[in-house]
Amino acid sequence: MDTVPNSLPSSAPSLSSTSRAKRASHRLAPRPTLCVSVPLWQNYFDAIALDSQRECPRLRYDYQIPNMGKKERDMPTRYIYSFGEPINPEDLHRLLQQTDWAQKRDPLDIQYMLDHSQLTLGVWDEERLIAFARVITDDHYRALIDDVVVDGDYRGRGIATQMLEKMLKRLEHIEQVMLDCDLELVPFYARFGFSQKECAAMLRDNRHNLPATTDLE
Image (tube, rainbow, N blue to C red; front, side):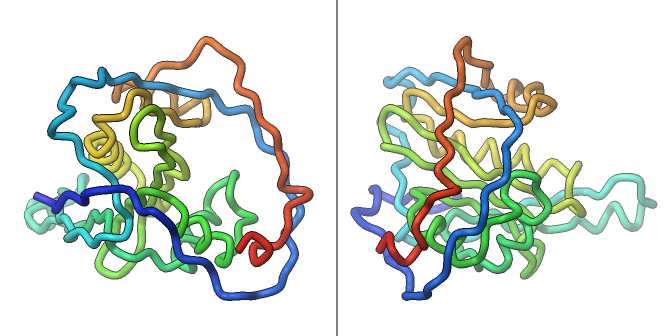
């Protein structure tokens, strides 16, 4: 079992000073907002608080590669799931380049994002980062699961399923857990208790007029 951190970080480290302007924004396609509610009393006293400052041990899970001969199937691929392992922003940048919603993020912004997210989950194949997700939360009422991405070479192997199960286990004490996703992914997230909200999702996009990251320090 993995070690449980105790509390949310009171502050996050700042970035080194580097001058540069934000890149121009690109238009996002509409994405439905999904939500799952968890009663406060359910597993409350066993709830796992979040603390990105405390290191957690790596967790290993075996995955049998399909469509191979018996000899190959008997040799499992071992993936490493960790909430505490530091994530290299260059490695995450490579992953995000495979998406249609985060291609314009650069490593400096990604590092800032990592420093200010309450919970991050990385998945490795040996030393290669192959999947990522993060959580933004007040640790009581609301939590947003964001930036869920799996390397294209590793999709269809159950990695996203393992990530969601581990994330939701960590968030059992939160009243409502939300996420945005493409329409074709609604059935996938519905398997974990998410349902599409009967409301309009409103978005104010400030990316065209943001200050440089160093101005936020």
